[in-house]
Image 1 (cartoon, helix red, strand yellow):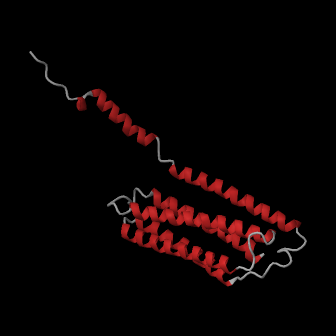
Image 2 (tube, rainbow, N blue to C red):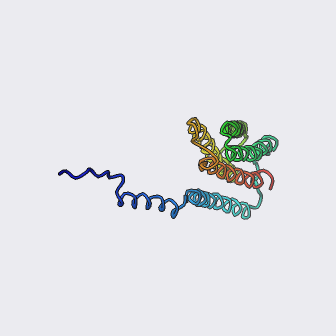
Image 3 (cartoon, rainbow, N blue to C red):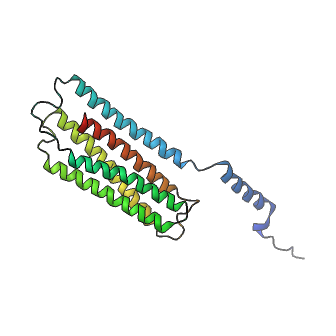
Length: 207
């Protein structure tokens, strides 16, 4: 007499394995945000190393900026700074929206932040094309271009991150009040970019 077929899905071993998988998810929480924070700490160390070098150059120079350096325009950088600071509040609205399961609102706020980031970059390019000193004019000019361009690279990356979030949000329920790591990570990165620019603005334009 043929023994009845055994359904593998219903074996005690399979039940035990499923329980282990569920327990595994509980025992090992999502640590991606820690990775984001570690990454930003590393980036911050690079920026602060550059800030330290700039301050050392300034302290050792008899005159700063060096004689012959044309005056810097303050209006455009100030407007750019205001745009970037305001964008931090805008992107925070996107995070607030998705926590209320408002995916449409999140997309709108992200799109506005993207536009503000692009405007900032356009303003920086405009400033570069109208500056009266070049990369090799003197030490101040070299520091100015290296610091602002490196920061601009990070702004560009932030804009691309927002574009990626918007692209992925096309799928229904891809982001929700329970699952929105990409949105939070992008927001934290953008706040980091803003803080770095405020320090740069003070060092390069105010002091």
